[in-house]
Length: 189
Image (cartoon, rainbow, N blue to C red):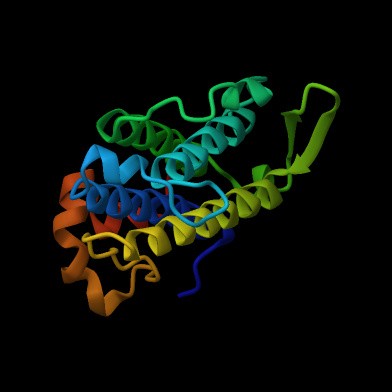
């Protein structure tokens, strides 16, 4: 059976949260100094890169929820320099994004989202904005993954998308997140 577009977006939201969970869990093996250390990347540290992911999530998830937070989301470029705080806040916004996607309908995917850019109001179709957000996060998680290579911490596997034959390999992480395979792939909200 083919997944609907709504089901696909719900699965992407869960996969996004799972990848964030894996990456932030791996970072727990770093000292605070290693987490903040300057590294090669667009954002010059793991702390800066992972905080960028967080603030951009705040920006877009707020817009998807109908809010007007806008660029206030990134007034502080590194709002959570401590990994524990960052992990908690990322998990919270990941749950919000999952809730947005669980509330989706086929008609809502074509609906418009207003994005507060302060100098203008950007209007995007909801499905396109979600695809943009997921791609953005994948891009920056890849940069953080590459930064981890330069540390003593083994980077986690991030290039998976819930293969049926590998469910047992993620079962413990799903339990940590309070998920089941059925929940991730459910057709209902």
